Length: 422
Ligand code: GDP
Ligand code: IMO
Ligand code: MG
Image (tube, rainbow, N blue to C red):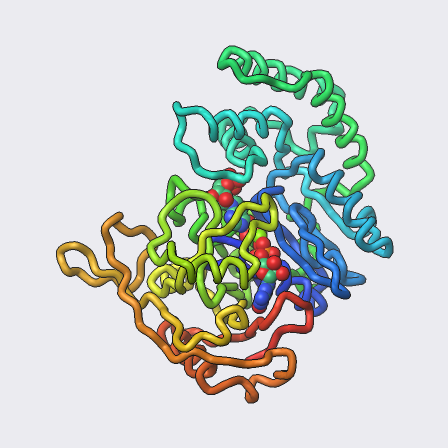
């Protein structure tokens, strides 16, 4: 089993890369997160953003697993499937999406609670996607949640109804203005009926059996290392395990079965939501990068914060995941600049230098190295040898610092805009 995961704060271009390489696999499998993900794929000049559906969905013959470590919102999933069928009517998700019986549900009140907690002065505002992700995962950990497999039980409806009513009581007491309970529960149970058309099974058995038959699995990370619940910039993180080890636990596949670990990173950094971002640019150039890179959340449309590449954070992410190949995206966005900055280390107040860092004190000072920029028309570059020398130097610099090869260089959002480097 190989893994693709994000090395920064999400939106590195995982979806685009997976859509492309899934042709080498029999199965793609999401192992964490839920509809907070937004994985954009461009096909024939048209674009779709997948939230819950794995990015191998367009590849004929590939099965797409929604694994045990994910949280599934049936209402959002139904909308996503209907939207997918409008985008491409040749896709038959009922035949090639497989859902874990052990994946947890995101209930309608989880989303309301997410909104409430984000807006209430009594809680830390994280800047979430308001998809109820933390609330579903926390109820899972509390052992109070319902799972996909429960939808076949005769008492499912009453169990869900009980949770919804309990949460409503709490939210109403807090003074939140709420939609009609009847309306949201009807919408939820209609989506459950829709979900029952899909193949729901013990995906860990399915995946291990597939590996036993020599089939190839690609695990698809959502969010990214710096948003990991344990190893990210807590509390400004998501609520799941986004790292390579999370693929193993989220899918029920032994770490012994892991092969290649593709770490996807942009040639600069972005972040959406609150939390530390030491290399953030607040000037006009930061805004220029946002516009040129189209840095607006695929999921929520929020403008992404932009900044220079953060090497200490990237080294940390490579270490945590055991990345074997770097997939560098968006080098095209930096094209045309005279020079390009990379944060090479942090200097702490007492003069200490940090070159590998997941969490930094507020007052750490990023120290930048300026490299010569590149200018290229990527539409005509079909071979890595034809890349400008300055970009080759930039890639060699990253390879030397991170001690891993750049396996792929993505040069645009389109499917074909990628160069295989090794
Ligand atoms: P994901 O969440 O990691 O799948 O990334 P998103 O899809 O949320 O965001 C990445 C954005 O960058 C999308 O709009 C992609 O179409 C786009 N993209 C991906 N790779 C490249 C690239 O190499 N160059 C440019 N210009 N855009 C890219
Ligand atoms: P993909 O898979 C970028 C961020 C949110 C917020 C924090 C917690 O497209 O890379 P949550 O809704 O998960 O409770 O929000 O995490 N976040 C993402 N940022 N890309 C994502 O996914 C994200 N998923 C969550 O903005 O800061
Ligand atoms: Mg995204």
